Length: 91
Image 1 (cartoon, one colour):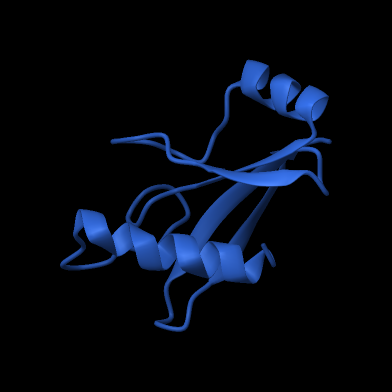
Image 2 (cartoon, rainbow, N blue to C red; image 1 turned 30 degrees about the vertical axis):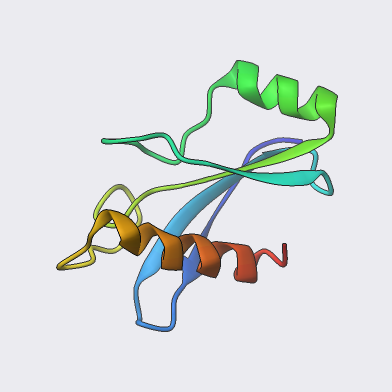
């Protein structure tokens, strides 16, 4: 699978930019790259995911890249964003 980058629009009018790689119908694994991080994935991870039947998903945190800022954001705010990603991607 080639990487697929797209944007998810949230109920609070923000957007989150994500990337998917690996097996499109594989087991979904959400990757958190840390601070500061982008949605980009290392090529060896993508190759490993393809070989293992895994669908890698990564995203740009609020205020980075193509994702909207979230004023007052805390570390715990990531949980709602991850839930929105999972819901949008149906996993």
